[in-house]
Amino acid sequence: MKEFLLNIDRRIIFIFVALGVIIPALTSFNLPINPTPNVQSIYDTIEEVGAKNGTILISFDYGPGSFPEVQPMALAVLRHCFKRNVKVVGMCLWPQAVGLAQQALDTASKELDAEYGSDYVFLGFKTGFHSLVINMGHDFHGTFPQDSPGNNTTELPVTQNIKGLADFDYVLCLAAGNTPDGIWIPYGQERYKFKFGLGCTAVMAPDQFPYLQSGQMNGMMGGLAGAAEYETLVQASGTATEGMRPQSVVHLIIIAFIILGNVMYFLYGRQKGGAQ
Amino acid sequence: MLFLRRTLPLIIAFVMGMIGILVFYIPHSGAQALEQELTKWDRIVAAFAMVLGIYSLMRLHWGRVRRQQAGWAYSFLVFVGFTVMFVLAIYNDGQGPLSPQVIDSGPFVWMFDNVQVPADATMFSILAFFIASAAYRTFRARTPEAAILLVSAIIVMIGRVPIGALISDWVPWLSQWLMAVPNLAAKRGILLGVSLGAVATALRIIFGIERSYLGGGEE
Image (cartoon, rainbow over all chains, first blue to last red; front, side):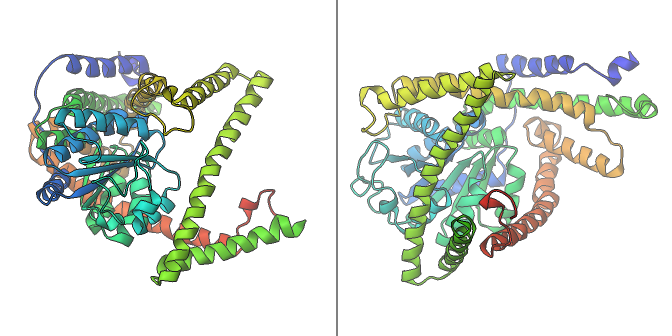
């Protein structure tokens, strides 16, 4: 038994994790989701933008691998924007994000009767990363003369008055890579001084705290928990809120295994050099 | 030949590097116009770099298939996947390659939504299983530093999910504090170090000290 607990087979751990995901996903129990100040700040900014009928730019910079974590953020933010009559311009710095962005825009616009062209516009993907952001800062219509379906951006109600990035009331980056701290902040926010917010994967979140403290970023949704907090704020429970049940249980399972591993290590493992 | 292979690229790197730095900081309209022009060039080069990337990927996997290296069947699947998606993109839901890409319906979108998205998301989610196993095996309080890291990790793990608030209101607060104070301090230090390193590397490239990008090593 001692040997077993000191070196638990990884397949047993996998079974525990699998059950920790499946059982809470199939059952229904509610957990309290309290929005953190960083998520609240994004919500409040979109409320402010809505009050003046403003426009926000959402940059979809993630791929299918981050879909379960970041897509709920996209949906919650879009629902919020369309409810508050915030005009939305969507774009992608990642080519894989085009299909995901289109999916989120379609879902939210159908639910809330948002109309293409007058409520939202999708620009699609263009190469260039930092160069694209610099070009957009100076000359929006020159950089994106047409939207994704091929309409002229100078003629669409949402984009016709946008001359550069500074004309957006808010820029929100939904990211799974280095686009917020590597591109949007140094080449966009720092130069054109727009309000900037971020929704990112949980693994990225710790890296972004310096930008929150410096004020270069006014809010952040980190991982599925951040998405669930936003869903709570907009009172539209979705996959992120549902995902909090399995995520909570799996975190507890991992912590239980860590504690067990340490207890066994201190009781028996130190003499043997620890578990293999 | 040496001029074309070494001297000319070094001159281009120096001139473009210096212009790139200067126009970024000079708010004069002439400098801004030049920056706009250069960034447009950069975007065109970036588009060609994508084509080069695809060529490089195909060449690598073609080599594996030709030599029938271990796992060559996976390399073959790269060609199958690429060809299918390329043909569907050209087909463009019946609109043809010259029309704007149809991104809300058709077989290309169907393949993306029903093959790539679930496959990619599954690959990523498998990490949870490996992290659980690795945490049990390696996360041991062998030293006081490791013990601090372990306790912090447990607090953040509980504090970042709703169950933390059920235990005590202090758990999410403490988790947030750990992220916003000690984590921030460490990250900022790392960030400053990395940024200084990036500046140094950029200057080494601009002044021709770092030449590995020319290929072929030192001559």
